[in-house]
Length: 411
Image (tube, rainbow, N blue to C red; front, side):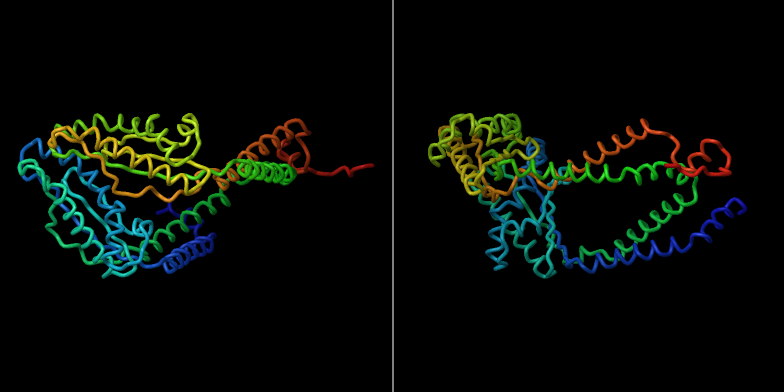
């Protein structure tokens, strides 16, 4: 107990700091919670199962279940739900409220729906499950029974419960943050560290104009650099590769070719066609700079980004490339046995183009930070070149004895 006495004495001296910062933290956490719009969450679960339970079909499901999680929140389903339930919500707003992921371990797809209305959250989850099952049944309609992959809902969507704000958790976390901040302030006031930092604060007080000037100049330079850049807008597109007959061999084939398909999508054939059909009058070299694509093995999908100075044109290029690539794939698969086909589907429209660069705020912050670092380096460089003793406190610190007198300055 005697060992804790110094700590207890410290708290008795500084208790006001602890109480004030803890109260401020708790009040801030409570206020933040009350400012948030309540959101209720309903969750749904789908099981992905082979019609014929053998090892090959099970391995196929393990390879496609993550893709199914992506498909479940694609534009096709979100737009259909919004229209079917008369929600009058855009696809972008629906995407903020609905999330899904495939769980390989349990071969299931989990979906969460957040909405200010608990009944509406559960209705969206139920409609999403039904639409996805119906779409899967359609895709499996012409597949031989032994190779089918079925999607089954054994559970109803959960009743929606309050997901956020979590007022108690937020207040507790904010209070803890206040206590940690109080501990830091007390340590700074009580420990010798503050005394050791005093000379540096004195330097900054003398040279503050240099610091402020270089920070402002840096921020202004970042802003000017951003304004000199030509605005570039980005639209993104996504296509999925699926085997017509979902067996393990075909799934492995897709995993092996998906990266190649990403390269094909930005080949000269498609870029030239898009430029000519849209009357862009852009050479291939310029088109190649603006369009990128890559295959994602995990989700068996191709992601494509199109950058352009015109937002509408960026989206038009993305849409044209997707259409041409799907048409080309259909042509190449026309004479292939249906059981060995690899189909390409676009479940999402290309995203509306948004400003990709310049990132003015990021440039200004980065330039201001650079200006701060340069200014600090310059300040301490100037200090090393000047007299080390400027104040009575510096005399006492260097001599180790108190100053007994002061010689007045003379002109």
